[in-house]
Length: 394
Image 1 (cartoon, one colour):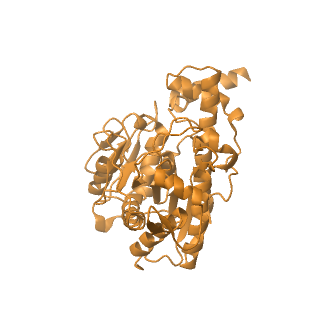
Image 2 (cartoon, rainbow, N blue to C red; image 1 turned 120 degrees about the vertical axis):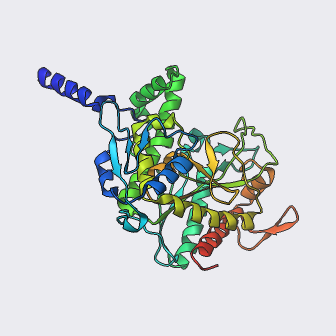
Image 3 (cartoon, rainbow, N blue to C red; image 1 turned 45 degrees about the horizontal axis):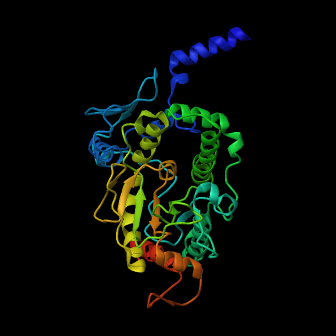
């Protein structure tokens, strides 16, 4: 038995399978599953998407090679690269195989709503919780679930088929921090971080709510629901310091994110290169940027918020809207269908905090002298108006 195990290990090592570099909790990529995309994209389109959207600033150059007839991408140490044959011309390209389809109407469209985070008992662990004095706590996970429930009703009224990825604070994953300690040790060591009781606890928790949970939701999206669109619902925030004594700010803004802007460092991971290829080849980009631009317009009209601007190199502006950026996040990377990732409002903005204290209500109330809907209904109206405009029903 020992000989068999040793021989198997040596075989894996020789083929490179044991040397693959994966992000925490990521499964090994099945590169053969990309063969269905052979001949579905031209060199021109592949090059545009790779170099301008998914791996800009030359980030693609170490992992990808592009020739006149094909592209290759590294699949892992010691393994042969995956080879993608280009279509000779757009007119001769094969149909793109995918479970989602662009829709010209909300009626019949399959939409999954992803209320970000968990809230409830997990809110403090997620660091998506703060409280001022005796006021009710601001809990992002609870707030986006309230938005999702209102949004589901409005979209279904317009004929869409809507599912929520969560309807409570119960996690989609069966994993918990105490089951992730081994993975946490490996993650800390891979990043050169010290391993001690405090760092191990924090990393185990982070892998639970930020990694295992999103992987579980991705399986729901890609294997069970297979929607035409995911709306990832969030509220934004500026740094608030001590959550029991938070710092409020006058800053308030809005932006939306789509998949893209992988760095060269991120593309060292085999699973991230595979995920990039799936999103690129199923042509999520054009749909994501088009829907996001329309929803951004709807949200800007509803909220009056200015656009947030990234100043670092983690995101790039895409399309003509100042509100829409490409950024490599786990959720918009793992969900294979188009994803509109919303980040409106700064939760620790003074006015936003006041509106959260008011909760949901019908009609309008004066906020700083201006009649306003509840913050939740305003959020929903912006999203619905944007989707309706994009799909031909302003």
